[in-house]
Length: 173
Image 1 (cartoon, rainbow, N blue to C red):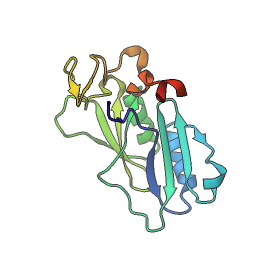
Image 2 (image 1 turned 135 degrees about the vertical axis):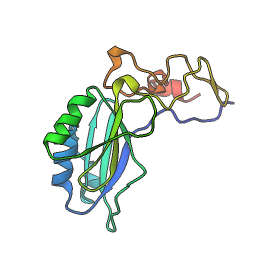
Image 3 (image 1 turned 90 degrees about the horizontal axis):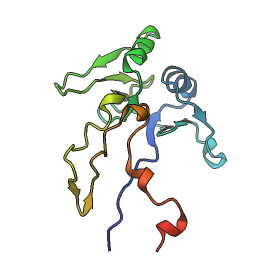
Image 4 (image 1 turned 90 degrees about the vertical axis):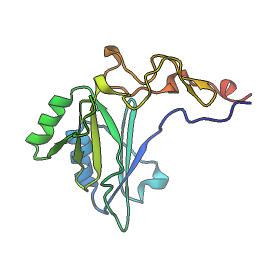
């Protein structure tokens, strides 16, 4: 029997201080262009705000003793990193060049609460996935094209989710 495996990320949860919804909307919605989605009624009273589009979902939740995530961070794929950096700069939000020496076009920015956000050019999406053809992760063979995007996919994260079962009958033996 094949053991269960992770097949994707549903959303990223970031913390924010109470009352930060307006700033979150301005940054994540206004600058990054993520559409806001309604929180479920059962969670709405907790504060915070959610954003989502194809391949990206970010939940900002209120933390009483909020402390920004200065090292841990999500990495978002951007279809035009140069244009987004310009937009952020024009809005007064500084971006920090990547100094890792990796051949990857990316930068970092802090959200209004100090959470670190990585922005990766679409052409370099999936750079953390080994690029060996047919390599194995446990007993699962990873296909040749996993982790790299073609031009037609620009702006969407790569994930094996597309190959996952699509009906309950497929998921449950």
